[in-house]
Amino acid sequence: MSLRWRLTLVIGGVVALMVVGASLLAYVSAASELDRQMNEFLLTRSRETEAELDRVAGLPIRTPEDAAFGIGIVNALGRADADIQLLGSDGRVRRISGDLLPVSAADRDIAGRGPDRSIARRVDDVVVDGERYRVVTSSGPFGALMVGRSMTDVEATLAGLRSWLTVVSLSGALVAAVVGWLVARGVLRPISRLAAATQQVAETGRFDADLRVESNDELGGLARNFNTMLSALRASRDQQHRLVRDANHELRTPLTSLRTNLDVLRRRRAQLDGADAGEILEDMDGEIRELSALVEELVNSATEHSTMDAADFVAVDLGEVAGGVADRTARRTGRTVEVIRTAGSQICGDPAALERAIGNLVGNAVKFSPSASPITVEVDSSTITVIDEGPGVPEGEETRIFDRFYRSDATRTLPGSGLGLAIVADVASAHGGTTFARSTGTGSQIGFTLGEITRPSVPLPMVEREEMSRSEQNS
Image: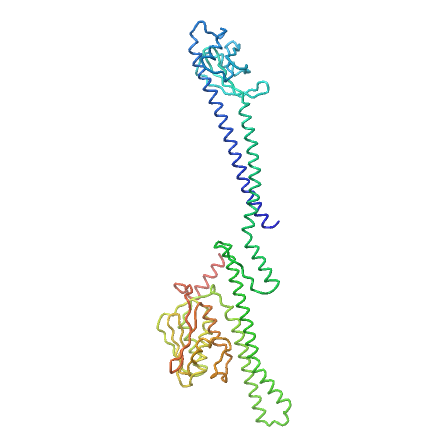
């Protein structure tokens, strides 16, 4: 069964149950009210008759055996809208008005007590000629007074009410089913469009099936999230295509050079002397190293951003990370790298990714600045700035140097893959930050500023973090 029909059944069933429940409640309330009114009428008529009997009880000519006794009582009451009879203590019945009512042992017991008014009134239902009567029996001066009335009118009213409520319930159930179907169709329309869009993406492999957002509720949020996901997939696919195209262009140059040198060695191996052959082999070795570095940077560039998750970020001291990069660079290159901390540098991030980003910035400064010049790394809160005394950043290229494989005309002949600063941009973006580059006249300042990511208020030592992690897993 489809979700639409299930929703229709649920909504229609709930509304139908509410209609049926309301109808039953109305019927029970009406039956109870009619029953109460019948009892109240009979009790009222019984009290009125008792009062008249009390009035005539002392008159010698007014006894139940008098022919005009019943007529006098009826005339005194002013109306004959009930069946009234007297039950003497000797068991004889004297009809006053209406039909004779059946007498039970309980009625005779009340009649035998005489005018003892401590006897409570008795209310009972009896059947007379196939009709149900309601009878009230009470003690009086002549025995027991029995006042009754047929329940035919009440039963006819309840039967009509049952028929009417049955029609209302059936009509309500039908209307509830129609309303449930319409509501289910309206609710599921965005989901149907989402299903069609996902099917289109699965069949065509294209991510241009954006949904139309028609509301601000949860379904509208679902459509917006789906569009955001498709936009991210489109951007990721475009980046992959650009990466493949750029990598194809960058890999072609060293591969062509290697192929050329290999062809020279193959064709002219006998004519080459040791110096020429060594020069070619040295050139091939350099190309292979350059190709290896390029492949490594390609892999890092393709995976760096995807392996970072804000949920896994931990407390990081940028100053300590920068100090470690400076010490390692000084040992490897012999260059002087100074770290200056101007403010607190406690942030929340990925330590390995931040170390790579700072290392790429420092490596870039080592490559483009004179060997005797110092390199400075400034750490100011969540900002890293690497200052060198190189040629600076060409005007108009301050943002382009962070693109993959971009090289200015002045640096095309220098070694490098053109991916180091692109990785810096990826790391900064994953941390909600931005990159910057500017010339100072005596060199350049290149770095990044991290965004405001939720940071732990008090960083835990590694041992405490491990113990907390183990306790959470055990719990």
